[in-house]
Image 1 (spheres, chains in turn purple, yellow):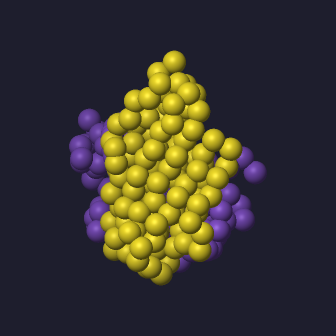
Image 2 (tube, one colour; image 1 turned 120 degrees about the horizontal axis):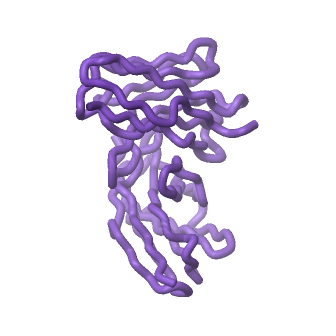
Length: 114
Length: 112
């Protein structure tokens, strides 16, 4: 297992465009999390899944954001009608339930909205 | 939800000195306290964690202490080395199945 994989690593998009990011978690991990991180800040929670069920969503997750985890495997995070304020690093993590061994993070997708 | 505060925001030490980073949390139901290290361009990496049934845990040069009564926990790095330079984050889960809430981070710089 190569850990948590995120694609793409970098994404530059024009304001108003839609973007989609993918996360492939560690295969035996049933929990998957999305966080957003801006420069100089800690990761901010967006949403998490246990298997295919989305169990919690942050108030940060506006209606322009949607996340899915079909079949409880990989996950996608889509941002519609991107705004400059969406520019950030989007981090994905996975863990067992309960997270006895902590989260394993991917390297993130850096989004720049121009 | 959980609120985690972390201090200091930046810390500069000489190689070989010790470094201490402190965090406080608000939800007394939190029972798991991890610390993560993040290097430039990478995701956070778990370096040590502690559960609420112990007061201290050590792994080589890194130790974490927990004071449940005061609701604070600390990361201690001894004999610091230049490769310890990174941003460190504490986190806590809060009540129930909530995801981790992270502190704002401490940028540690170890001067050779």
